[in-house]
Image: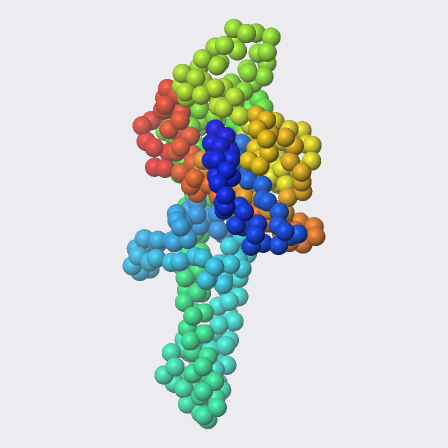
Length: 418
């Protein structure tokens, strides 16, 4: 629907002369100019990536500490008052380490701190200052003029480094507290095994569902298990969720959608069953079954390359591919032909937009696609979404859908986050 509306708007705009496109073409080299491909997706393409626990620094800060619009607000605690940090491209440490696994980030913070202390000691020694102190405030600067000037010149840089180290030390400390309190390393390991290896240790799974972690943590892990296996054993999993008084709406919603997809695939010979499913979908969602279960076969990302990344890569290649043959193609410059024709690829640039919640895990996966392109820098990908949500926010959206579908709480009246 969005693609058709956009196609109509662009076609209408092209009737005007001049228009934005003729102006852009005139200002760009004709030989080098190539139109990008705009890829519009619905969140149903891949649910699992929206709820998984990730071990990388940036997704972890977003998920656990609530990073929003590149700003992080840290509540007051025993160590001090509330703090607010900017985490963007102006933060060199964030740029260099935000996609690293958390343990590696902690090691890098220690390394940066050790290097800072070494540099402060060196300045103090050269200027005859306090050789035992590790803080550098410029009050003990003595010595010859050259050393004094060098030390003064280095003071702003050392001060900024100390601020950066303190900031990420505070963030890492807060993360570590949540990791220990909620056993997040266990959730990450178990979820990763299911998502990338297709295996699960049921005793570990049930131990996590009955042990540490928020209700949202347990619900996310249970839904991941539901998505990962065609015939999961759900009795003990559901019992463990009920023991923890978890709102079951999101779990029952995904369970119902998965069941519907299976029935829909098997009901081609039964028009009555097919009709019942269609009626159910249209009654609850006001849209067709194809919209409700679109891409349900991709609910789970297979392997380490996400469903979204695989699809974008195929669309950018512009070659016949079973994975994208059912996608509607629109070209505002071409004559109207319903679903459009086969695009002539490859495309160097893609604009990817997720209608529904996007997340940092998908963003990183698409950036890796561009970075690994051959020859280097031959692909450029822009990622956008109606909103960027973390795992807690997304599981709450699924719970809301489950409640609208009349699937009930099933385990207490508390929202998943509590």
